[in-house]
Image (cartoon, rainbow, N blue to C red; front, side, top):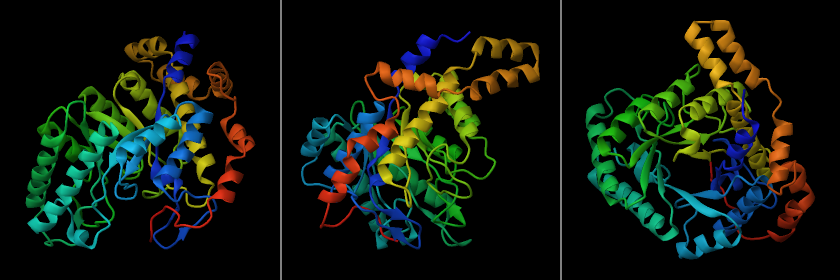
Amino acid sequence: MTDLAAVKAALKTQAVETPSWAYGNSGTRFKVFAQQGVPRTPQEKLDDAAKVHEFTGVAPTVALHIPWDKVEDYSALAKHAEDRGVKLGAINSNTFQDDDYKLGSICHPDPVVRRKAVDHLLECVDIMDATGSTDLKLWFADGTNYPGQDDIRERQDRLAEGLAEVYERLGDGQRMLLEYKFFEPAFYTTDVPDWGTAYAHCLKLGPKAQVVVDTGHHAPGTNIEFIVATLLREGKLGGFDFNSRFYADDDLMVGAADPFQLFRIMYEVVRGGGFTSEVAFMLDQCHNIEAKIPAIIRSVMNVQEATAKALLVDRSALAAAQASGDVLEANAVLMDAYNTDVRPLLREVREEMGLGPDPIAAYRASGWAEKIIAERVGGEQAGWGA
């Protein structure tokens, strides 16, 4: 039998990091869709993120993206966050938007470009020092479009050299989280295309380097929970970028495409001890057509629901069925947990935390959406161009 009190206690300790860029304008590669009330500054992004935490109770940190969130005084930015009840989380680097990076960044054949890219990563570590962040999250668009365009092995050598320099710069309590993506924007080879490549580099770098699993960065049919289980077993799962996709990397709301997959992933996290370890649970989403703050709140709730179901798995019954080779019963134990309606349980958890039972309804009643639409007039809205 599952201890409901223990499940509730675990759910109250959950923390989902929201991304600053999800509060800005975004879209497809063809069009960015602007919305009213979108933040114009990093400070206003933090104001919105604070509302997500206020109504969910489990979104206490906000990831920054540099240079999208560049400011003169990062200590002041950290203070702005703390004044609103949140903290700054992972620092995300950007080595994909400059013209210099057309042929890559730290894997580029030109050492001048590689130097520029590594210097940016070192700048991000400086920002970590100023903000108190512990995580440097790296994703590289590096790769090639055509056979023969560049030397595949040499690009791995360049990657290893650049990562090693940044790794040596990390301070006590800081770590490097290396993300992978099997394709796009490079179409022939990608320099960090899969978890094995990321794992190999992190293993060589040392204990401060760990792998990030972006749930949208896999080929169709990939068993992501197997990857999660393996990385947890090896002590190399640093965190998640949660989102959903139907075809390629769509950055849709987590749990929207395949909530059963999210449940299976979270079960492996719970089973592998990742729920109470240093694994970072981050969202990495773009809300192109839906209202941004409610979408982020809903995403946090989706993670909560998958986690609650994973915590409800009767692990003793599951182990017994597995040991006896009862295939159907083992599957039934998992499905019983997945088919449980955990929304009443989560409403109880929120009420016990002093929150409204329905975060979306609480947000809509707060008047924040109307307030930011009225006040955020003029200036340049945050977002990315296409």
